[in-house]
Image (cartoon, rainbow, N blue to C red):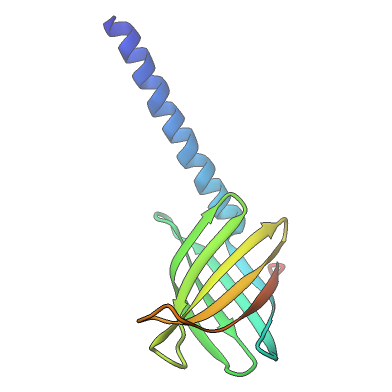
Amino acid sequence: MREALTFWLCIVILGGAAGASRQATSDEARAGTWSGTWEGEGATGGFELTLEKGKEGPLTGRVSVTGEPTYKATLKTLIIEGNKLTASYDFTPAPEAEVVLAATFDGNACKGTWVLREKATSTTAAQGTWSVARKQAQ
């Protein structure tokens, strides 16, 4: 009985380690700079998403947006599950607002939506789409 319990405990531990390894590999595959455009509410501009993997811990990221307005921001939240990305960041031109991103990775491309909303009420102020492609390392 004790040997069977030990066997199954080892299987569970090894399965968890393999899952963690797959997540780390997935994070490393997404790391890098992704460049493209955004549009919405009658405006358009450039959009750059940079995802970074440190030695330990989850992916982190930042955005650089051009057009009207032009700004840079650090991601507050970032979740990648499979090929789906969700993230949010403070809208630096208006501290009372935040931007929420949702997207799907497809190889070296990523497309999705953005929503600018008030932090206090989650009321949508503007929304649109964005798409990026992985920038080649130089």
